[in-house]
Length: 141
Image (cartoon, rainbow, N blue to C red):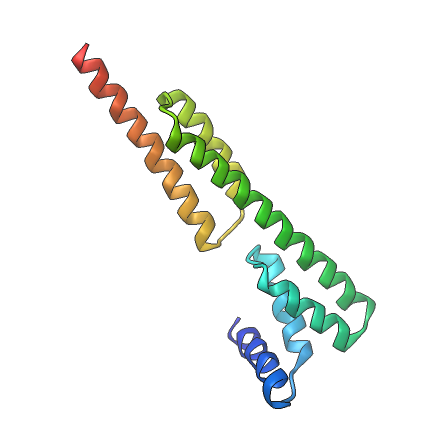
């Protein structure tokens, strides 16, 4: 991945200073990121520049796949954020929180992004918190 990151930086520097960029290395890095499921929104612009520079059918398909993956990642993140907001704003039973946790786990499955891990951790904490509240309420009754 470091070669990919180097080339992304070189591409950005090229625009500012006129340096050359190894678009094949960028293309390879984008393919790796797709396989890992770690595509981010900023990779879409890089994929477009790679497709424009190389001009092959495979590079254009790669751009479409990167764009789709970034969009899906964004949609999953939005859905998980909605679930977390509902859980934070409403007092939910531990059963309801368990169901929400399963939804978050499904939505973030296969994603290694820090954001997905953070959302999953938050959902787990909310589930544990709802269990603790129920236990306290049960003892007080």
